[in-house]
Picture 1 (cartoon, rainbow, N blue to C red):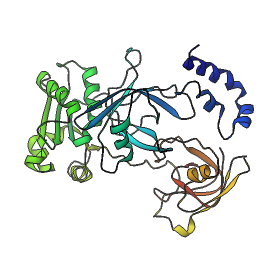
Picture 2 (tube, rainbow, N blue to C red; picture 1 turned 180 degrees about the vertical axis):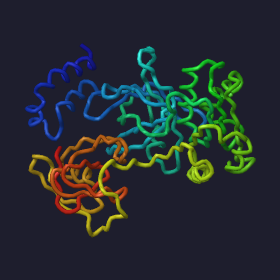
Picture 3 (cartoon, one colour; picture 1 turned 90 degrees about the vertical axis):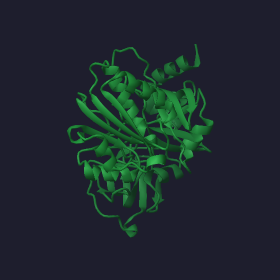
Picture 4 (cartoon, rainbow, N blue to C red; picture 1 turned 120 degrees about the horizontal axis):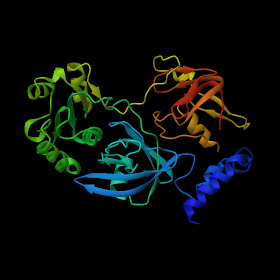
Length: 373
């Protein structure tokens, strides 16, 4: 019996015994021990890097997700990717670049991301230099509101710059999967690059698409020669822009200008999404933050300062809380409050008993008791 199959057997066999086994394995879980046999199994969603391609300063990873992820997503969404760097898990979000897999189509459910290293980018730099085939990484489920609607609009405008092209590549590939050249929607794609062509991993593909598909028009803006792409350049190149559903991904100043000029435009920004409940407020007063945290029925109580999140405080005292991205995006760490008050550091929202919080970005405000551990 191979190692992966043995891991599945262990996982199934231990499931009915989980409550009893948990007492023996704390702070780990029975699932963690199953992970010793199958590295794709564990509390966190995991994936294996199946292929690595480095081209034109970009690194493309093909990832096979473990049993905890279906691989389903909408074209344009992103995933969280976690790497063990110097003994600590570091997370960043990256747009998926492959087309979504339709149920029953028989295609592989692997995922691809294409990453460009950024100055000081710990995760992107590590991937560019050290990512290898067979490496196990952690993942969060696909998310984000920046994606193509269904059905696909008849007239589209894509505006991208630099690495901002990545989510739109998923959209373009999805449209290509679902249409023939004769049934394509009317698409104009303006891409700004410091050169005459889109990024190397996509350049040939987009050039071929432009040549072979009459209703896909690629306009490359050479910012090294013509300066930064501006709204006036977009409207001049696409006079009928008002009749198109627009999607844009790129630097903040460009997106801000486009949003002001095209109020209904869809833009991609990797900001954490606010919670559904809670009372949002101004930046919290540091004097109101911090306090004691009690974790479930463990009997463990620890003190958190106003700058130490509940998740960090738990790990500092040996309590293992389920978590994912550590960025307030994936919702893996959401847990209910049973007593006390917590404050979300992102927006100052306060939460009380019965409400759910993200432990990775919340701190106590006085005494706090949360349900799980």
